[in-house]
Image (cartoon, rainbow, N blue to C red; front, top):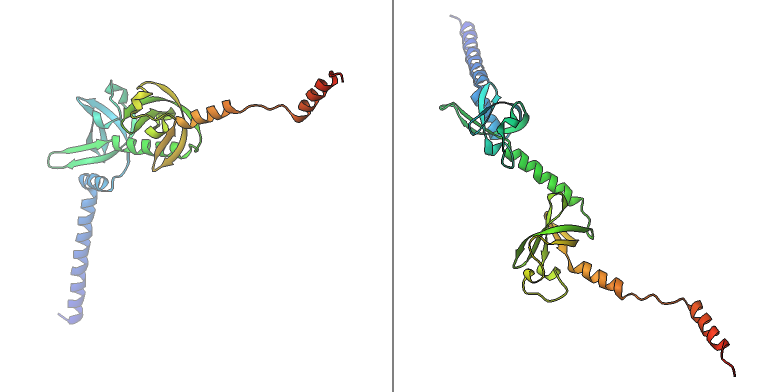
Amino acid sequence: MSEEMKSEGLQTSEENVETMADYEEHFDDANPWNRVLDYMEKKTVLPVKVEGIVNGGAIAMVEGLRGFIPASKLSLSYIEDLETYLLKDIEVRVIEVDQANNRLVLSAREILKEKEKQARKEQIENIKIGTVMEGTVDSLQSYGAFVNLENHLSGLVHISQISKKHIKTPGEVLKVGDTVRVKVIGIKEGKISLSIKALEEAREEAEEKVELPKSEKIGTSLGDLFKNIKL
């Protein structure tokens, strides 16, 4: 066999090896378990339809595989009736892959939490310093009071911002459930700082303002007074 033929045979053999390697890669790609594993590693958001309700959760198909969504992973709050989710379109992530035990677990909760966090961030960014709001005292701590505001937001009234009077604990002037008017005095790292004292001071300043009569009225009054005096 000539060297040229040997060379051609070697090239053909190498090409065949590369082709088989390519086929093996395609086989791996075609394996749905490898695809869902890739989804889990990349935290891919997957749109699915709830196709069944079972004890403790729901069923949705991903890449032809039967995925289980625990009831606790369907929503951010307790679901009274799982049947309300039947045929519902939701977004999920793969959170567990176990091919040996034919187990695929999905979750919508993490995605919902991220969306809620983003929505809260946008709401806070739209609040302007100096805005006056009404809220309800949610809890009292040694350092201040947490107040629930509109749109499910909350803020802290530091103990130094509760009253003009010196107080040792927030409980001296507030109790849980009280409706209060507060002023936004600061926003930092997603946290809202509130003040009740600022509104008290503003109200007192308004009450202290005395309206003085205009100078022409004063002159007229004095003129009228002297007009009636006989020398």
